Amino acid sequence: SGFQGSTKAFGNEATMQKAGSTWSTLKPEVKYQFVLLLVTATLIHADQNLAAPNLSAIADDFEMTPMQKYGRLGGLVQFGFFLIGGAVSLLIGPMADKLDRTTLLPCVVCCGAVPALFSVFIPSSKAGFFWFLLGRVCTGIAVGGSYPVIYSFCGDLFPASQRTFVSACVGAATNIGAAAGGLLGGVLGPRLGWRLPYCLMAVPALACAALVKLTLKDPRGGKPVEDDEDQELDNAGSLAWAGGREFSKRTANPLSDLDFSKFSTIFACQTNVMVFCQSLPGCIPLSIVVTYLADYLATEQGLSVGAATGVTAVFGLACLGCAFAGSGYGASLYARDKSMFCRFISVTTLCAIVPFVVLINAPASMISTETGSPRLLTLLLAVGGGVNAVAGPNIKAVLMNVNSAEVRGTVFSAFTLTDDLGKGLGPTLVFVLIAICGRRAAFTLGFCFWGISSAVLFMMGQTLPRDARAMANSGSAGGGFGRKDRDV
Image (cartoon, rainbow, N blue to C red; front, side, top):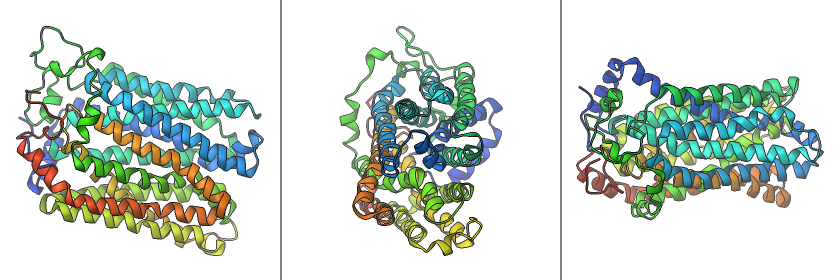
């Protein structure tokens, strides 16, 4: 038994209902694979938001001026974190298409978790900033490298009809991780110091890395094969999720077979190009939320550090709810009208600008009480900003379904790079704007970059129907751009 392969990117409503009922009948070990990947993604992303609530305390430890705080901790650290992480993802993507991902994922997790574990030894001096920057870059490698591995793994583990849900779950895991990390840093940082949360996050991340290596099986098999190329995998759970399609170990090739020419292949799909183009401006506002918002609310809008962290946590939870609701409606809309689907995610992205512009520019008396607690309006604005998360899982599901399994890791490495460029350049751009026109105007302009992303998503309505038809005509749920004329 198992899913029957669907030629539609998202599947119709009946297919989704059938997929949901089949999920409840799967063996526990199959569900365990997916849950472990989600927990691992959560812990990796929790690390990246630990500094935001304690930006001023970290700057004091490293003897920085206020402008150095924004330029170095906000701009330089984030630039190194995301740019190097994105560059590494370009290498990890083709590796995820060829190598055993149950070995690859623990390696990238350890790259970030081990330096975080030793954060407690960073000295409180100007020299300490170098070691802090080095640790953040290593975490960037872990975050950037994990995206193509996890999405490639899930793309092979799940059929096309389930990939919107899968994408929403992975996106939710990263949002929960970022929110939980910010909350942990905001609660423990002022009391026990900003270094301890890094250590507390590193230990479970390393435990998950060990569990991935010891208990999971790559759906492709994961071992280089020379003779027995047509031997079928013995992972029944993966076969069940693959819609009845049989995998062969021939897709798990040694490192010497890495094909970096795939990067030119994926740009033949215009929908890929549109997704990459909207990603960079779309991530600049998120970089402001992650890097500066909590500190701004605490220093300019009268909130306590704990309350400011709570507001960003509410935003994270709102993103979680909007991502799941948006992915469900997006799947239904995609099946009916792909152009309308693009307009839907375009409008939700555009609407996210308004709550944050109000939150930044409203008088402090409207945002906080005299005791430093957030007002109801503040929480409602944070919830309203979560509408930006509607686009995320829908976009990633599109990428998983208009590209074949052979290039999926490469596609997501390129997508991660454009994402990371936006997140890395965002704080640097905002720092320049702060020097020119002040924080309030700089943050306001930064959030308006969602308007550019919204415009590109609207234009994607012209390319997506054509590329979706190309995927459907391939005759396979795993088909589409990048698929070669041979069995997988």
